[in-house]
Length: 289
Length: 166
View 1 (cartoon, rainbow over the protein chains, first blue to last red):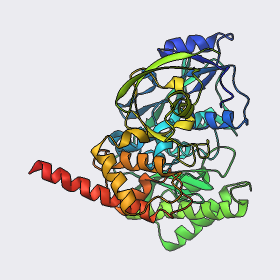
View 2 (cartoon, one colour; view 1 turned 180 degrees about the horizontal axis):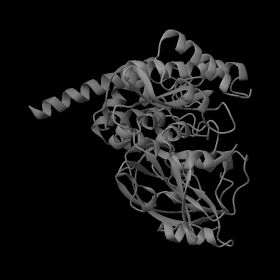
View 3 (cartoon, chains in turn yellow, brown; view 1 turned 90 degrees about the horizontal axis):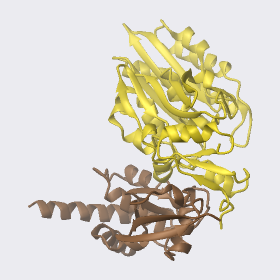
View 4 (spheres, each protein chain N blue to C red; view 1 turned 30 degrees about the vertical axis):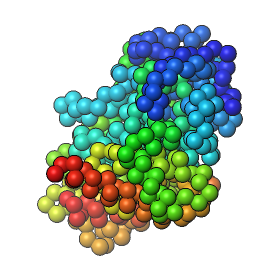
């Protein structure tokens, strides 16, 4: 039986009420949405049971999924299942829909949320690369007001966010994929489903007159946070994607990442895979663009 | 220990229950409601044995604090599947194809199968069927007979639809 039965359960009916509870130290609580990370850690004793939990599941203000001009707005409470099903996400940020479809299995996708995945700030979180290539901003809120932070400044380190104790993640703002551009997502893990990534990543790019017009690429599990590979992005822009360029791009991408060895993979293997992933993205861009 | 009271529709029947809100939905199903068909495998959301349908979506009930499930929610457990034509057909095909060996994963597996065949526009290719069951782990069967069973059931169910249309 659960160790959580003495944990106080707070059920705000609105975001405003949730923010008021977070503002007061006597009612501040651990936010809980899909539970796919937190419930496991509490039940296994990896994390001590919290004094209070703030239930965010079902809050209407966190359920946005809409276009605002050329910006795709995604509420923090949107589940992976909803992301993969959404025609808006498929059209304007397809690498995010593809990433959502590879998280866990159907049961985990129906529970886990994009806010929870980013809030967990794991370098192996599958949502971050697709958000990074879409120049996403995280919007956080407290009773003091709301602020928008570019994702690289929001996820500041290994499991560390620029998030004050009274703030909640509310939604994400993504630049919609421009006309004529394309995206891709690849995840390498020990098996296809229910697996934590060894290396994964996304790209967004566009060909112009047979040359790379724009290329953004982000990888996860190769650094304390998911990262954009600015070196390779700049180097490849304007180039024709011939065999020599692809070889050189693969080499440069492998050199640009500085992964660690851990229980899931070695540093050498991660570097090699990073090069191969970036090469695969460029080949995809060349054939699709 | 503070408790909450919730009224859900469980396997088609309204049920009002009282429990500590952070108790796992799995425990409320098995212990509070006494529905022992739903199994606990890993307790970490990896194996899918505790799968149930919550508002028609398959979820691992070990990862949900029961208090998070609001009034009016629809829950279908393995006990509720055989009340439906799709559940009955899946049950028949699991038996016909010898899809169950030790059986421990089967309640969760059937819930995943049911979610797939009752979903919007189900794709019944082998790859899609395997993906629909990717969140369920079986240590006996090697999955082949399970996928065969779902494929056969999906086939029969789609032909039934055509009969209805004609």
